[in-house]
Image (cartoon, rainbow, N blue to C red; front, side, top):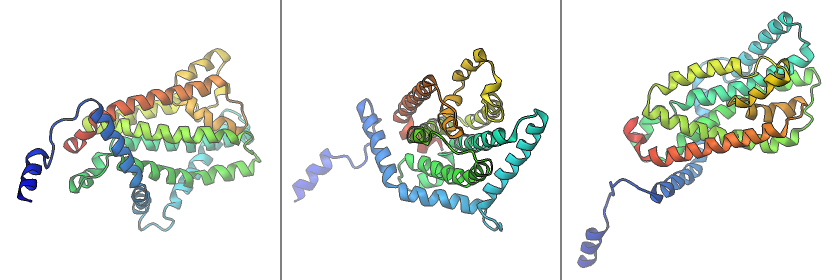
Length: 284
């Protein structure tokens, strides 16, 4: 027995601190993703607690999310509809859906830069998969999105705007969720290494809010100018979900661009995650 213990101690290191190289980084990243999926119930609980803590002590609680969105859509719809003489029957369903979808995207990207730094205490307390905070952030923003969707349902019901091609949601919703995970992971890794990422992303999102057709309709552009919307990193994936719900046909080129952007996003996120995952605890 003494010989066995001696041999094991001689050949098996207790803690291997040598840097990973090659395929080992990829296998470790996949193991991290699997561990994050196993911790999904914990991420769901933490995501819901984040919302409850944000509105702790208020009378309406998380329903403030719905009320604030309804006030914003009502104010913007009334003002822009009056100024530009737009028919509210067509404009308000478009605006309500666009504002809610943009709120989800903006929430994901704005929170992504600090997804690891905000979980610093958790990483320092014990060993957790790096994908756990990413799932937590996604769940929190999905729950907030579901609160906002109530406003869209009311507006659609009031104007009798029924979705005509809801089958396409079988493609667009998984695309949105997978892109959300990839972009959160990528920006989170960069944000953990470079603290400037958070203000940079906040500034960029303000610019893209006006560039992307959120409060204005793509039909206002001429046919020549409309093709440049494909260069917008948000418009293609935005349109794959919004267009069918509003009853408009989405061109095949828009779908191809959306999936192409998603593929590029996943490749970039995977490369960064494989290379930077092990350094996260040292940066935060």
